[in-house]
Length: 499
Image (tube, rainbow, N blue to C red):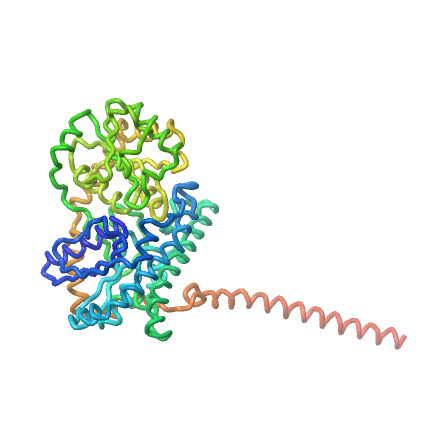
């Protein structure tokens, strides 16, 4: 589903790379947002127009209050669940009414269908058009729900959850991590449930679940990059190709060339394509403007959706507002010094590949984890979204990435490791997809026990048995003592009678 830049960019780039690798690729674009690019320019496109109510909900309906609370507050992502589930359900139902299109896709006899574990509708579609194999993908790192249903080992004491920003040895940290895992399970269960409902309404309750299709997929392709991620257990079917979404920077136009020449340093500021800067609380906007005023030798290019309605930056000649900015191209220009970002996976991968430091202000979802990755690798500063009301804290964060060399040194090192990796993301993607298209689901790649019940997977039955042995022994010992005591009492009573 085309609903945000990051998802469209990743899926589109994946399609184009496969075309460049010699494959015949069709990209099905189910649109709920028409103002962003398709992401692909080389694959054949089949387009499904927006369902009217789904379009209204995503583009003009009331969005959840994502700027409320702390960056660590899991309620931000939970607030999206019913809203986005309804969008998924309506658009998937709408897709299933396109019977002629579906019949045409069936006649194509595709060797493989790649579906995203976000809008799960693609997996059900793969089933009804008779695709020979299914490949799962996601425009971020492996999420906890996919890890669970595919049997990927996930010891949560050391594996940071998708929605968790910190994990250490403390009880509170590990407890919060478990809570974040539970939230990820719930979120994806609801979203996958939207696709299940759509297909079972049309094809009956015996239609297999999309989770079953994901579990039996031949590959799991993620936008994670091992050099820009936290290490975790994995399995043979998982292919991390995060760098695939990073396009080469194009030369900037004359307008931006002039802007970059205005001052010695330039900082980009973008909250992504879902969280709108124009929707920030007034006190946040005021604090940001006050902060930018403290850096007269720095130009701030701010992606701001309503540049004609921005009184908070009136009179600040070092702040340039634009409805949209070519972030990847600008990050590739040596005159850009740093990025202030919400911390989406695309932004993390772009700034890491370009070797620039960044301030991360996570809003919701996996952004808190992405910020934690940048902090651990040394090129990022974490700023809680609650701190956007504090100009002093914002200024400290910006000064750190601009004038403390340790951040730029760490950023350049990360970029160098990405550039010199042993195998390119393109090689990994093309060769794995060609292999999957030829051989389908190779059983030797499936994790043993992925379909085990929870009590078997965690050996809870054995643990119960181990606990029962001493318990039964104690009970038997107690019974013997009571019986012995009872017999002794009877004997004593008999002796008393005889006397």
